[in-house]
Every structure is written in structure tokens, then in C-alpha cells.
Amino acid sequence: MRIGLLAPELSEAHGWGRYSLDLARALLAQGDVELVIAASAASPDDGGLAHAGYYPILPPLVPAGRWKTPRALRATPRLWRIFRGCDVIHALAEHYLPAAALVAGRRPLVVTAHGTYLPYSLGRRGVGPLYQWAARRATIVPVSNYTARRVADVLPGARVRIIYNGVHAERFAAVPATRPTPAGPTVLGVGVNKARKGFHVLITALARVREVVPDAQVVICGDTSDTPYQETLAGLIAEHGLGEAVHILGRVPDEALLGWYHAAEVFALPAVNVGGRFEGFGLVYLEAGAAGLPAIGTFGCGAEDAIEDGRTGYLIPQEDPTTLAERLVGLLSDPDLRARMGAAGRTKAFGQTWEQVAAQVREVYQTAQRG
Image 1 (cartoon, rainbow, N blue to C red):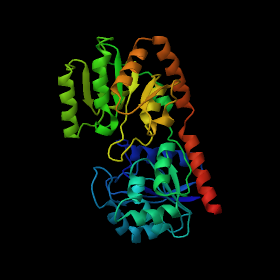
Image 2 (cartoon, rainbow, N blue to C red; image 1 turned 90 degrees about the vertical axis):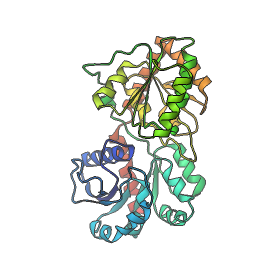
Image 3 (cartoon, helix red, strand yellow; image 1 turned 180 degrees about the vertical axis):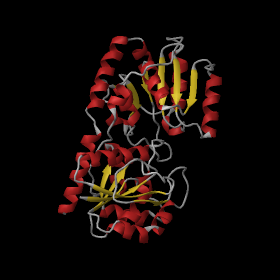
């Protein structure tokens, strides 16, 4: 089977890139697959993927900007030539769906729906009808039930197959040679520092947690380029007198991040839906589980699939620092509960492999080929 992939930057630096690399590698490992890859122009390196052709000609997805859809459409003449002879066309990022649909013609078309972008584009003035036409041609692969519901709200009757993200559980279960030494019981948060990740809720909750667990700490790892949000967090830290208790580290090397996963007691990412944008799945919850940490996320987003409430961690209402503080105090005060939830999280993570994801995606390809 020859698959034409429209891929974003093949990089571990963001979710689209990690997903694309992991899925492509897993598909190749199953054999009997040949990949032809049209990728972001910001991805001159093929990521070490075996391929029958690699063409970095699509508009980059990072940093965020305008005109990605028309710029991708301008690449369609070249895409026609590149994907000649492909059996299936798969847009690994929603931004490339209209171009993928034009190129696919009567061939099977698949698009992965990671989160906000597809439902937003389906209802967007101007390009909405174009995305709706393309999406009705495609098999849509949302990475969570919540994402699937948001797509269905805008495009009832769409052809949908939910396939959760995989996780490299063995990577995060491995205890690093060196680990940081926190100043007290530590809650870890990992993600780009922006409002949708809910770090403002976590910091507010910490002030309440420290009334019961005085030496509790929060460590946040992730990109800090959103300056206004960083100022918001700094204001909260000052307001609550948490200057010695909140540690915003920015992006850290993989080994350092792994060290924090194994030095912390609890993982928390209290995601918030902001202006129609939402957490599509939340792979970090599974990564934390693989490291043996109970995870706390929120209802009303993809975390509902990544966390089993009461078993691998907790789901709480969004923008609710009071409930978050209660859950954190309960976990920080009960090592046996942390151990049980951490063990369940590890089991869940090891059961969600990229091999399984690739097998399900192949089923989508084969079903689409049969019509």
C-alpha cells in the first residue's frame, strides 16, 4: 500500500510533529507500506523516515499565523505529481485537509483531527464551506471522543473513526540516572504555557494546598513564549506569595523532563476551554501515568479519554481551583493512594501503544479503499 502523507514539521517540539513521526514510524514497522511525504517547508529533514519521496513544500504550522489554507492550496499542482500512484491520501494535520481533498480525487482520503482546528475551520466564515466539502469526502480520525463530538456538532453525519494517541510508555517509565531534588512534595505540569493549559488554576490551587501541605511545590515545564500569559502567572505568584513554591522552567531537555516525571508526586494539567479552543487529547497525562504518577485533568476536553476518573487520577470541573486543591491535598497526603493510581496509570499507558494506533489506522485505509 502506498500512502501519501501531508505532514507538518517532523519535530518532537510540538504535538502535530510528534504524532506524525510516531504514526509514520509505526506504519513502516508493520511492513507492506510505502510512504510518500509532502511536509512543512520548515521541516527540511525527513525525520529519519524511510520514504519513496520527501518534499518539504507545505506551509509551516508553527508559529501560528494566517493564510495557511491558501498557501497549502497553492501547492496542489506539485502535490498532484508527488502523490501520483498513491492509494490513500492522509492529512496528518487538519490545516492541509482542503489541499489533500483536491489531490485525492476519488482516492480514499483520511484526516487526523487533533483538537480545535478542524471544528473551528468547519464553522469559520469564508473557508468553512471549503473545509466542509473536504471533510465530507474524508474519513475523519479524531484523537478523542470529545474532539469527535465537537466535529459532529458542526458537521453532523461525518464519517468518523476515533483512534486515541499512542504513548511511548517504556520511555517515560525508565528511571533516569539523575533526578532533581525538589524542596517539598511536588506537583508537575507539562505543556506550552498558555491559558488553555490551565496553569493559572494550578497556581491558585497551590495557595490553598499549602495551607495543609506547607512545603508543597509546583514545577511547570514547557514553552514560555506567550508573554501576556507569563505576566498573568507572575501576577498570581506574587499575589499569593508563592515565589519560592512555583518554578516555571520553560522548555527543558528530554532527560531533565524525565527526571521531573520521576521526582514529582502528582501530575496536574487542569486544561481550560478558551474561545472555542480545547485540549484535544492530552498525551502528557499518559506520559505521567507511564512514570507512575496519578494525573489530574478536566472534564469537557480530551482528558476524559486520557484519564480514568478515580482510577488513574481525577477529572475535575474546569476553572475550579477549590476542587483541584482538594484533590491535590488528598493525593499528597496519601502515598498509598498515589501508588495505586500511579500503578493503574502505568498499566493504562502500556496498553496504548503506537503499534495499536498504526493497526487501527491501517484498518481505516483498508475500509476506505473498499468504499
